[in-house]
Image 1 (tube, one colour):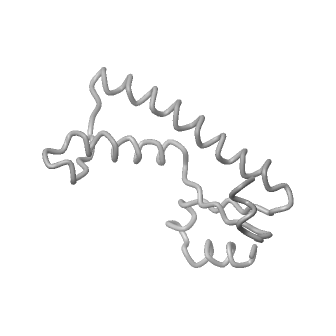
Image 2 (cartoon, rainbow, N blue to C red):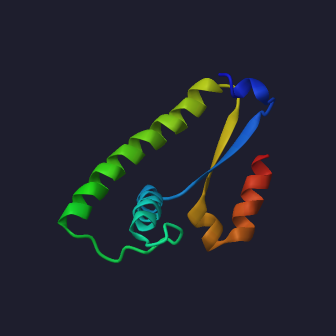
Amino acid sequence: RQYLQQTSAKRIILLTRHPLDAVWAEFQRRIGTLLSLDNTHVHALTSLGPAMTQLFGKFAACMTCKWSLYALAHEQLAPDVKIYYARYENFVKDAPKAVNNALTFL
């Protein structure tokens, strides 16, 4: 609740992405940075060995749980605030329509 007291917003737009795409991108960012020599460049993971496959499974389960708790917290802590879940994929597919939908919500 401490964060919600700082705003008088009546509507919130929450940008979401397909869960698997989001988790995979974050996994690549974290692991790819660890695998880089200078720790500044993210290397794309094109294939996973058995150890990485197991690690990705655990990572995906953890991130899915965290995202669910995050989304639920917004809904429970702000029952009077309307939330519009905007899909990242919709912005990629048809940006003008997605922006129009978000602005219409506001």
